[in-house]
Structures are given as C-alpha cells and as structure tokens.
Image (tube, rainbow, N blue to C red; front, side):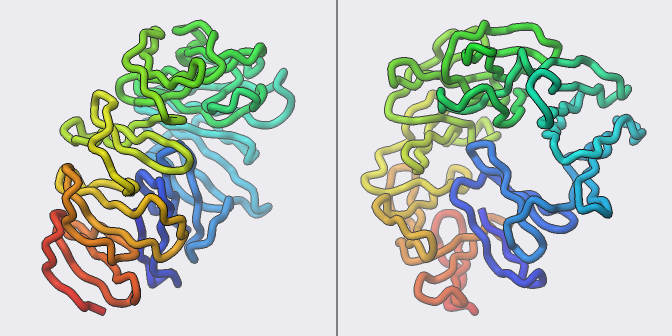
Length: 334
C-alpha cells in the first residue's frame, strides 16, 4: 500500500508487507502483515512521537513534556483512566480495552482489561505469569513483543519456563503452555502457528492440527474478505507467498514475488531475484500467472473505483491509469 500526500511535503511512501495504513491527526500508521506498526509524522519521516486516535475510544495526546498521555474512554465517552507514561501498549477490541504495562520489573508489571461499556476493570493479569510472546525466536527470553488478541479475546502467552500457551482475558488457560514457538495466525478463526522439528503447522485454540505447512517461517491472515482467493500470507526469508483458505499456494510463482492482490482480479508482483529497495519493476498477473501488465512500473496506488495509478519505472512523474485487470485507460500522464 502507498500514500500520496504532496501537501505534506512528500509524494509517495511504500513499505513492503503493509496490510493497510491509517491517517492520523499529525501523521500516518502503516499496519504491517507481521503485526508491527510503523509511525510516520506529517512529513513522511518515521517517528515514535505522534498524536492520533486508535478506534473510537482510546485517545493519544502529547503533553508539554513531549511524552504520551493515554486517555481511556468507555462507549459513553466517559473518561475511565489516564496513563501518563509512554511505557504502555494499548489494544482496543469491540467490548474491552487491553493495557499492557511495559515499565519496571516483570514482578510488578500487569495486563489490565477494561470494559468499554461500563469502564470497570474486568481483570488484572500479572505479567510474571503471562509474559507476552508473539515471536518465533525461542531464544527471545521472557519479554514483551506485543499484546495481540483474537476476536474471541484469546492471546498467546509465555510462562517463566519459556513455553507458550493460550489464555483468555480472565486468565483462564485455554491451551496449556507446551510450545517454544506459537503465534496467532487468524484473528477471526482463532488459528495459530507452531513449529515442531522445523515443520510449520496451523492449529486451533485446542491444539488440534489444521494443516502442516512446510517451508515457511510464519503465516498470517492478509484478507478479511471470505470470498477472496488469497486468504493468508506466508513468510520465508523476507518474501511473501499468498495462500488460499486451505493454506495452499495460490499458484506457482515461477520466479515472481507476491506484493499484494487487487481482490480476485489480479496480483501485483515483482521479480523474486530483484533486491532493489527503490524502483523495483512491478506488474500485474492473474491468478493463473498470466501477465496482465508487464513489469515496467515502480509503484502502484489504488485510487478507488476499481482503478490503479501505476508510475513508470524510468520516470516517476509519468504514470498510467489502469483497471484491476490491467486494461490501460489513460497513459503518459504527468
């Protein structure tokens, strides 16, 4: 995904592996497929200092000391708590707000869940028993990555022995900790990925194997539309591979690298052996691998209405307008 904002002194920004981006008051947040968030200020520079809104009830404000102040509101817009430190991770769900304390020793940290309806504290979970770990690095230690909750309110935790399991927000153990590597794969369906003897498998919250998938380091859902052919994205050595709802490769890419798809009309690809950061040749193929738009373009922007703006590789200021199936509607535009 990309953004164009010439009024803010930059024209184009693109981070490979972006799922979507959110425009905030003083900048943007790029939400990555691997769960990370990248913050940019109004000039397009990466920053940790941003003012914005997450959902409708968690508000971030920058105070005079240049630190964050986080105000939590319930569904009636009544203030329920204020966090004056910037050492918190806040996640907002339909029914509750989760706050993860990242300051101090593990003995004193906690995870707190607030009801968005009433503002009451639903539960306190001591971090020493629920160290959050959404990582495949089994040597990462007992530390915080980020608090990633499924739609039903389940999350991966790591016990003091370094084994991962699944808990709900009230501290009830859904899956006993027995995995060195465990990660949320599908927010909607409560699917998770584990690795045993180098083999990646998808399991449900009960630990039942849905499918063994080899050759990848991780898998995450990359489409919320149940009708999309591409449902998941697999990761391996920094590259993305699209999978269908049954975790099968959509087609053999034959030297192409997946970038993103435009519904079920086309897939944006580049050459897998091209390691360029900028001016990477990209084009469109259909779901059988047939070329719809040759790899002569350096960037693609979804401009709405089923139309795409593609900048020429040799001259960024010249571009074409095409539909999602590669039919060129206007060209040599500047």
